[in-house]
Image (cartoon, rainbow, N blue to C red; front, top):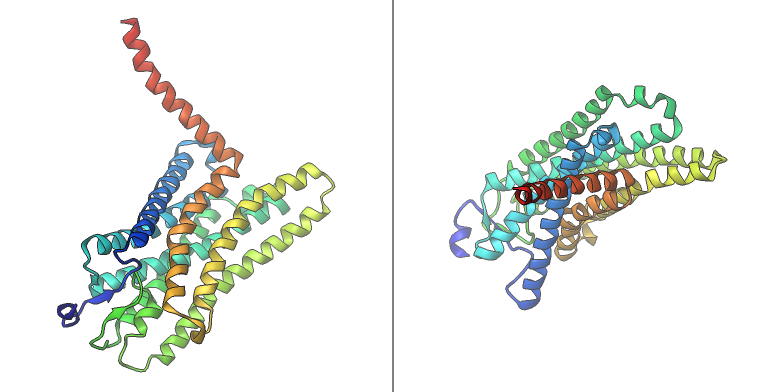
Length: 320
C-alpha cells in the first residue's frame, strides 16, 4: 500500500473484504452482472431479429439495454479484478475513463427515459399521428441527443475533476472512480467546482424527470377520459413497465446526487451505487420481458426456431 501511494495511481478501497460473508456477496454481484449482460443482450438480439419489434418504442428500448450492458461492463470487471488479485490501484487515465463512461451512460439514460415517456405520450394521446411524431428521423434524433448530452456531461466532469492536484493520500472509499469521491482527494479548494457539479447533476436529473412527469400527467388525464375499460387497461399496461424503470433509476440517482453533503456517507454511497450500477440493469430486461406480450412473443418465436434448427439435423440423420 505504501508503494502505491508514491505513484500517481489512485487506490480504490473496494466493496468487499475476504471474509466468508463478503465472498458470498461478491458471488451474488457477479451473478447479477452476468444475468444483466445476458438479459440485455437477449433484448438487443430479439429487437434486431424480429420485424414486429422494429418500431420506435423498441428502438428506444434497445438503446436502454445497450446503455445498461455497457454500464455493467464499465464497473463490474474492475470490481472483480480488484477482489481476485487484491491489487486495487487505478491509473488517472483509467479513473478518467470510468468517470466519463459512467456519466455518459447514466446521463444518457436519464434523457433516453424522457424520450421513452414522450413515445408513450404520443402512443396514448395522439395515436393517429404516431407515425409522424415518432418517425425514424425523430427517434434517431432523440437517441443521438441522449448520447450527446450524456457524453458532454461525462467529458466535462472527467476533465475538470482530473485537472486538480491531488494529495499524497490517494485512497477512495469506493469501488469505482466517481467524480464526487475523487474531488474530495484534491488539495485545492474545490467548493466552486462542487457547486457547479451539483447544478449539473440537478439539471441532468430534474429536467428529464420533469419531462417524464409531464408526459405521464397528460397520459393519466387521457386515460381517465377513456370510456372503454379495455382501452384503459391497455394504456396502463403500456406505460407501467416504463414507470417501474423510471422509479427505480431516478429514485437511486436522486438519493445519491441530490442529498446535502452533510448527509452523505461512504457506506451509503457504495450500497446505492451497487443498486443502480448492478441491480437496476438486471431488473430492466426482466420488467420489459415479463410485462410485455410482444417481447415474450418474440422470445417464444426465437426459442421455437432454435428448437426447430436443433431437431432438423436429428431428423436427417434418422432418415439416413
